[in-house]
Length: 419
Image 1 (cartoon, rainbow, N blue to C red):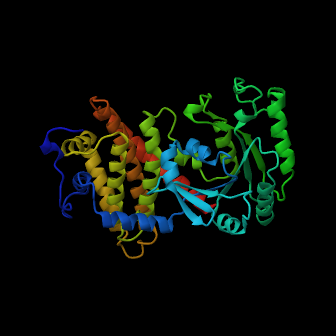
Image 2: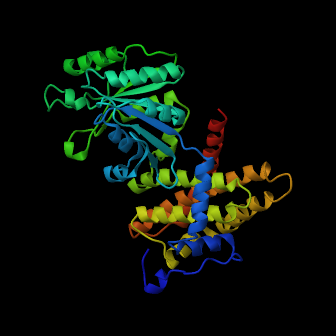
Image 3: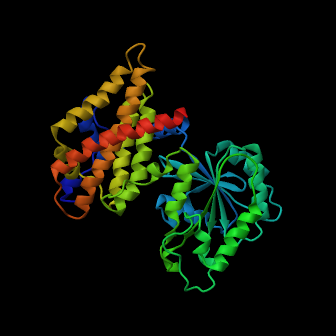
């Protein structure tokens, strides 16, 4: 996506309001500082009006909470380590992705430490959380402090389902060369017959220590072992599918759809791009439902998303690449994008429709367009990153299919909000 200097010339002035919507998008792509005020306003509005699901990680230090976040998000240690922000004296929140989050991880620190009073953390976390994930290292034979907090939470919220992850299974191996039982045995009710005695004894002892919890909500146990490459233990994410299954069973938050791309994605970059695309699409839908705000806000969100995606592939948009991308999509895209961008804003100006039909149209059009732009851009960026030609027909198919998937995403979100 680089070429001669003329191709990479940056546009220094804002795009004219008289330009067609798709032409504004093309010009704005060349400006890394695209309408920063509009972007900030749009992200602020989306943050106020759209609450990303909050997964409360309850566990002691070194129990494997960060490894769970890495596995669920596909993010690395550096990003996660720098991403946590304090919300109480001993609790932190991590937004993923940072600018347009699709999920927030709430981490309670300090459990079991001397002079730690969990009351403030419990009050803060239980007021905000949508799902509770308890993390217990399998070698923790006396997790009294954790059990006490868990019992307190369940007494106050007896209907809450609880997922309990028993982590660091490799630390219970009698011999470091033992390796994991394969295939994963713990989904089978007869798993005790297949697991080495030392590990089986620890898993069962920990469950006995927790005992029956107060309340009627289900308690789902998931043994797992998430390690780092330098540990040289395979598979690195042992039990990940079981954890996803438990989280999906325990709630209707749709975390898996938010964080994981469909099977058969293009490459590792497309997998990393998926939560970014979902986050910006949901933000655009939220802003698109507001009267007038979306006139600048939604395009700013879309351009910022496309710039982020290019960065994932180690590229940046140039005059040549942005023209080629839009040109390959063809006239149907230009007309359709322009009609949707202009139409949803006009409808919301009609008296009596602005807060009803116009808002629904604005949300659906903005979210679906943003999702389709992101998915289609990944196809283009993947080919360009490998120095290959881009098939226009494939790009147009991706655009059409992603528009439909974007609409489905928005419909699912609306259904979950009504529950």
